[in-house]
Length: 372
Picture 1 (cartoon, rainbow, N blue to C red):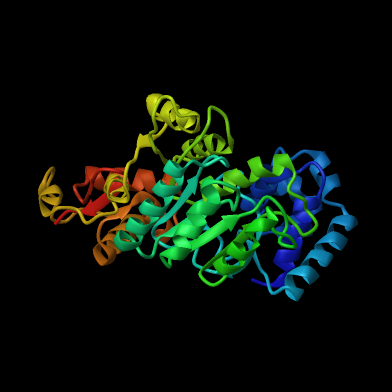
Picture 2: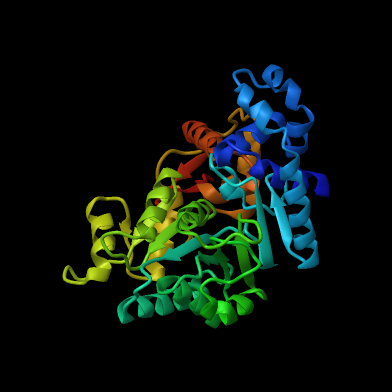
């Protein structure tokens, strides 16, 4: 990826009146940020229905001046600038309509590994919530040592999830609500630095951006969108973690909540999520892995159901899915999306067709296996 695409992606975020969704739609339709600006005057022919105000907004020299300053900051501080067209960009997030078209990263990890989860919760964590984080992550490190733990570096559950991951040598990423020229809260600086070795810090915000309140809601969509599942450990009746859970549901991600006593204020939000069927109850890492279908399927489960046709006619995309399942074994639909680089809505249709042809079988938790 050349610097022109990065520069233009940053500039596009700074053009007035376009926004997250508008910027992504332009790039999806035209192909690149460079071409969005290069074909600015021809957009009405290339993208019918585009508003004339968009054409005017793209004529913004000030946006490029600020983008150039940001690129200098990126290079000086050896940050990674990720655009939608970068292979390292979180592929799960790329499928979301409001995904950021450019992000900044400091650290060392793979966002596109097979298992990515986030753990979020109240800033006023109780000993119960802290202990759950420690025990859950420790057990997960045995079951799925290559999993990535994502959170927001905030007080409470967030920071305990990060520290638990570090204690068990698991990769952990903090998604920030400000630029990479600062750490908020500052008391978590040491943890943030420790995360750079195996994990790191990720943000969509330019340097000099302060942690304003509305930025945290924007940050939460990234936390939800880049993961396979959201785990709400503790939450009061209202809170940012409930927003993250709602966003995860909107992105068709799995959502889990840790139950608490009905008298505990820190568990009201979790208990309601479970009561309203907005989240599955989770009590342990083993239970979570089994529910997600990330554990090895029993041979009997594979044998059950329809038999595979001997010579089904498959499309090229269906053949690709079959090859992936042949080489890697049972996979969650999100993992198949990553491996095949096929949008989730298209992948769902392909898997349905393969089921009808007797080639694959759906297991519990969105996992698919190849029938013998």
